[in-house]
Length: 548
Image 1 (cartoon, rainbow, N blue to C red):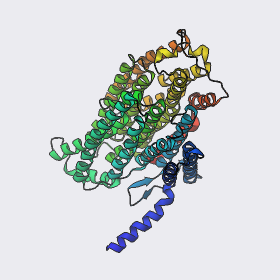
Image 2 (image 1 turned 60 degrees about the horizontal axis):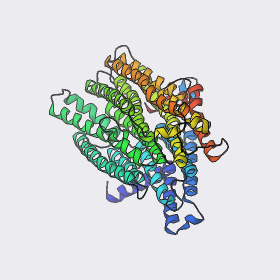
Image 3 (image 1 turned 90 degrees about the vertical axis):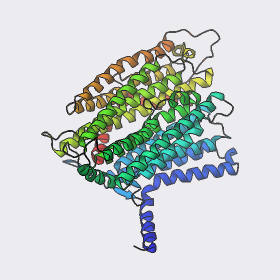
């Protein structure tokens, strides 16, 4: 193939890929529009928030249209048919139902965050174009994380997500805590990125490709020649996988790579904390699932050469999840700042969600026994379903908690838990909204957190049938659920029982005000997803089956 043929092939592939890349292109266009607004000082008559919201809404509409077109008429008497899986840009990205689902998830979440910033007034009108450029740029990286099909895109997507996040954490000018948190985040992020990049170079050099599907086939061949852990090549493979997982663990704030999270959340505004706590988790989990499935490859049974090794990777992820959950819940006990407490809560919930990924890896690499390939993938699909449902509930309950923190901050100028004393008498709407979010974070019925956590725990229970060590993970998760109730209840005690201190600033929020409507819209789904489970659970199961 000569040079002109290569150029022609790349051009044709790009032209075919661009229409399917529509939501990301709309976000890019919105970022350019925001830069022009900033350049020409047009923010006086065209607020940056309006430009960002309109652009995000258009991207969301495009993603919703893609999901409808992809799945319309695909269900039949024997269950959902498999929608098309299309490689974009010569295989760097992949377009499938999993990609489009996360596009809708992330863009809808972005829309809620932008709405929150309008309600709370952060950022101000002058800095809005800069802030929304960072917000949209970080979301664009998360969208690429969900569709990455090549290790090069994995690294670029992680960095595209991270770099704007550093700036958003330190966005409040002249605030020492914010600047310090941003600097710590940058230093730790650079270290994690370096480790991840070295792991990518090792893995791609060992397998001869950085393309995930090609890697999956290469791993099968690699396992036929190198299957013993004492083999240096297998040791190098393990080291490469661990290094890549370090980069993902940093984005997920898993123990012991969590150290940036509490400081960053405390130093940043609650709006940014809410964004990072949900969106970065969603993008990183989508990436982790893609990477794990590439490791497993097409041969998903216990007789594959590297199945025992990959089974151990799954068990290792399970124990990492258990340790992360335990650490997050224990560290949250002593916190007096609400954002810092929610940061440790975020760490704990990342552990709960990682249990589903661990269960998937164990299930796909378990010995064959009497299971058919379809049954094995069906069990793995339930693991992914649990994660997707948990993320959907986490969207509303965690954003709701951070949003109420921001709304209270605007009136009390404090984010300390003790400043919430007497809140139930002053503003029942905010107190009840926070109670709904916190009870759901614990995992109590009838809130959505219970349904999500139940699905995850059921997937871990099923994985225990293949490896009994997963039952230990399940017990740790269940015990931690009980432990977490204590520090969440402490916040509710302050709000509903403790009297307001002398000289405390009053807090008000009317139901039909901007504040009240936002709280209602972000907390109502938390209750709805705990009662009306069927629709979303069926949708997430279909997406999981299409992925596998």
